[in-house]
Image 1: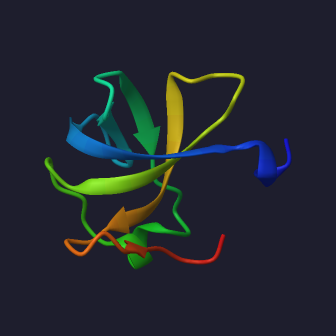
Image 2 (image 1 turned 180 degrees about the vertical axis):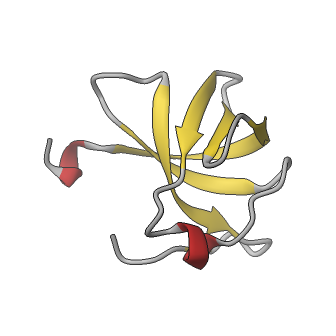
Length: 82
């Protein structure tokens, strides 16, 4: 799947599910599971419940996503080039 087809949405972290998986809530109330890749874990840092993050969703499966950055208090996205 080309990266241009991915859907980018902001979300709030509800809680951890495992080592790199988190339960997320979108602004419309939809909940899903998202993970952080090993490549981005050192860049993004520790993720706590309540944090705002930027998600990348596949148009084929909207129940799973990938965390690609953290949204700071000023609304800017801190992420690495993927």
